[in-house]
Length: 263
Image 1: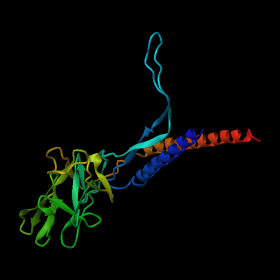
Image 2: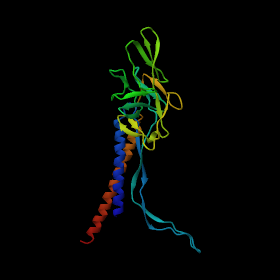
Image 3: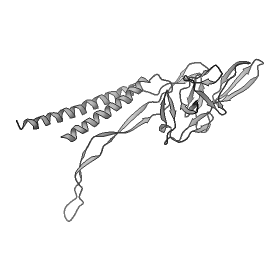
Image 4: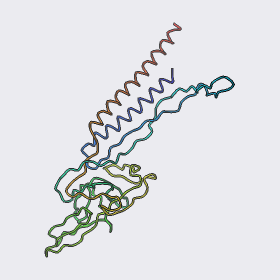
């Protein structure tokens, strides 16, 4: 009887974790560059009450008798699918159409992100909303607007400006990072990722080269969360939680009957 109760407890705990994952996805449905997560389950170890026997003489074999002991979380995956692009018309709103990540730096720490809402700080560095500097081929990209009439970003990541004399000047080159296993990246908060032992090191390339996507200027990548999918998963998690709670309740009722036999 206790086996069924512990199985029910494991089910409740893991469906609660599933709800936690779904809740975070829904909370970030409007977060630029956010990548949804999903949880997968696996059967826990089974208790063998009788081993298997092979055929012998004129008698056939018998299979093992095993009783499952519940469920466990197999993985919580980062789904790196492309989100839809939203037009903003702002020159420093950048989206990656295809694979790859923008590279930003906070001090000595390097992060990777799909959120492309960038800004110019006081010193002319291109930074994200948290002040982390966008990196290019020659380090942090800085645009000195003294003497410039305007600047623009191309789909291949080159940043050019037009000075007061009407001449075009090269200002910097955005670089993207790819990974052998981008789903192995570790979330660092703020739509940022960092490398993990299973993601591999960053493979640097120019936008549009070596499998990296091109840059869509004046657009932002929306979250790849699908609300209809999340609500369906939420119903599944809710029913799974309720069913496992019912297993515990039923097991408790049977235990109560056993206790009452002595009265």
